[in-house]
Image (tube, rainbow, N blue to C red):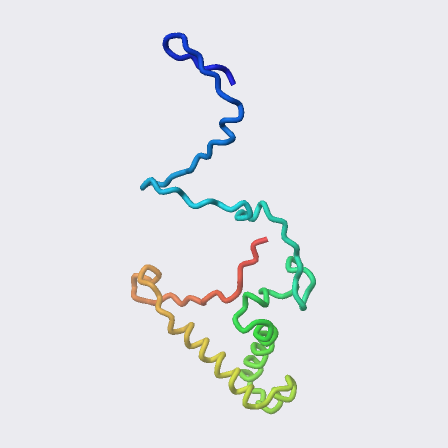
Length: 154
């Protein structure tokens, strides 16, 4: 570093090691020291391994629509979702509960429970309160379908 000129022609030389020993503590509004940020805090500074799970060896190429760990009910709920949609559809077309139960390997009671759960979800969607700004001026209510699928943004 260059020497600093002081009044009366005094020069002060700074030691090159001095700045390394001085610790500057950032302070917040009230003068309290800010918490120390850990070096491993930012994801850009970490290397992650894509270990996957027992369904698929890599998360980024997994065939499931949603990760089994994000879905309430876990893997069983992910696997049963498609089956439940098919059961509700077949029952709405008038197929007997015994036939559906035999086809999917479940009991009649399970078929009725799945159909009732699907009906309860439909009723909840139909009874959803629509905000005033989405209603038409004539008083007619605009029907909205609740999005249950994630957007495909890639």
